[in-house]
Each structure stands twice: as structure tokens, then as C-alpha cells.
Amino acid sequence: MASIKRIILLLFIQICLLTTSALAFDLQKYEGVYSIVEDKVVVDEKLTFSTMVDSFKLFIPSDATALEVNGAEIVVQERPEFKELTLHGNYLHDVSIKYITESLIERNKDSFFILDLGELDASMISVQVILPEKSTLKHSLNSLTPSIIPKTEKVTTDGKSIIVEWEKDDFQRSKAILIIYEEATKNSSKYWFFLLIIIVVSFILYIILRRSSDKIEQKKFSENEDNIHEKKAKLTDDSSKKSEDIGVQQVSKEIIRDNLKEKLTRNLFEEERAIVEILLEKGELWQKQLTLVTGISKVKLSRKLKKD
Image (cartoon, rainbow, N blue to C red; front, side, top):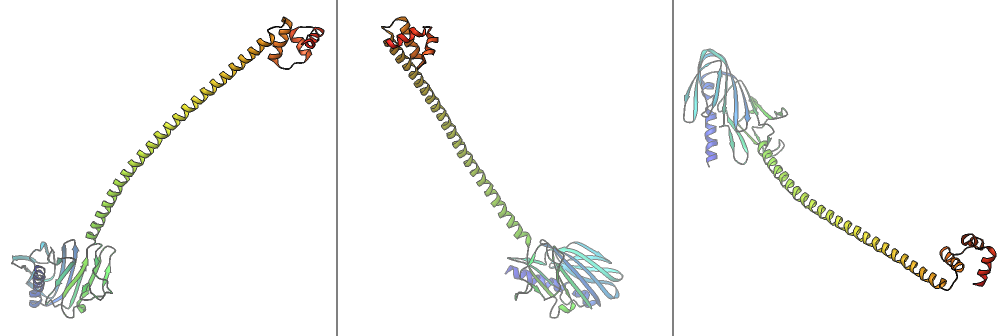
């Protein structure tokens, strides 16, 4: 309800805007550029009269700030619903008026630009509305639900903003303008907010998984080291056992050989004992080799071998 009352009040103010000057004087040309920046509208109006005048009155929104008037002296009177401007000069002809206002923007779920030039009558009328950067129309130009009233074919873009223009022939029924648009800044802020949350959560998960992975790798590394130490110890033990076994076998062989040697040579003479000991040590030998090793003559050695 409050929103409807505000729109009605806004329309009333806009009807008052320029009505007095249009009725009092012959307005030849009106040019208005309305640039929307966030929740404000920068208004730049140019009025051209066909006859020279020395004063006229017009009305602007009550919240208008940064007011600039070129081509005339100005007296401002504050009213409850609007500001009354009285312009003075010697034979005024071209006057430009600039100010900033929030009253032309209405917001609920969507954003609305609302302007009514009332009974403004001029031979030439040109109105241009520049939407905020990266904002989009609520409905496409081909949609059955309009986003621009009154309809116009002059919808362009400068690469950053959508620009909507009307001329006098476009205002056949009334001079009320309505544009429904969606602001990109809100959607963008939401997008970046959710993106930031995703990045933070992903980073936390990465840290958790990385730590878990490091613990697993460290555990595997420790287990591998333990296994390596166990294998080394086992190999060392096996080698020791093998060495001990080999030593025992060698000692056993020596003992057996010594026992056999003692039994075989126990009742033999010196030369016969030497022959047996050499054969036990060297294994098989030719008779000639045995003669050289023992120093016993061939004949004597032959006789002793036959005797044995």
C-alpha cells in the first residue's frame, strides 16, 4: 500500500514538473537525459523556448540535490511535495537544469524507473534513459509482457548500459514512462558470495584431505621402514646361522678326517703313515707324484703299496 501511495505521489510531482512553464510559455524543444546510477538518477534537462522570456517557474522533486542551472538566475522555494524553481534572466532562451534525485526509482522485488512529464507540450521532445551498468530488462523485447512503456524501437547499448529513447511521436496517449529492470550488481554480489563460500569450503576440505593423506603416507612409510629393518635383521640372523652351520660342518669334517687319519695310521710305520696321510689329504695321486711328495724311492714305494 505504501508503495502504491509513493508511486501516485511521484506521478503527481512529475505531472507538475514543467507544466507551469509549458503553459505560460511557448516551449519549442525539450531534451531530457536520465542516467540511473545505483539508487539515484542524474537528470540533465534542456529547455528551448521559441520566444524570448525573462522569467518562468517549474517544479522538481523535493529530494533533488546538486542542483545546477545554466542560462538563468534561480530562486528556490521548498514545498512539502516538491521544489519550486523561479528562473530569471534577460530574454531567456536556452536553459539547462541538472540535479540528482532518488524519487524516480521504486524498488520491491524488481527495480522501476517512473517518470511522467504531465502536460508537457513542445514541438520537439526527446527523452533518453540510461540504465545502470550491466543491468537487464525484466522481460525481453519480444515478450508479451512489456518492460518498457510506452513502446519504442529505440533500444540500444553502449557496451555497458542499455539505453532507451523516445521522441514526441512515441507519446501518443500520455507522457508517462515506465521501465522494469533487474540490477546486475545484486545478482553479481550473490554470485561472488556463493563462489567465495565454495572456495573456502573447498580449501578446508583440501586441507583435511591433505592432512589425512599425509598421515596415511607417514604410517605406510613407518611400516615400510619397520619391514625393512625386520628383513635386514632376519637376513643377518640367517647369514649368521648359515655361517655357523658352515663352520660346524667344516669342524665336523675336520674331526671326522682326524679320527679317520688316526685309525688308519695307528699301527703303521713312519713311511707307511706318511703315504696314508698324504692320500687322505690330497685324494688320488699317481705313483710318480706320490714318490716326489714322500721322497720314497720308486721301487720301495711300489713294494709298500703292494704290501698295503
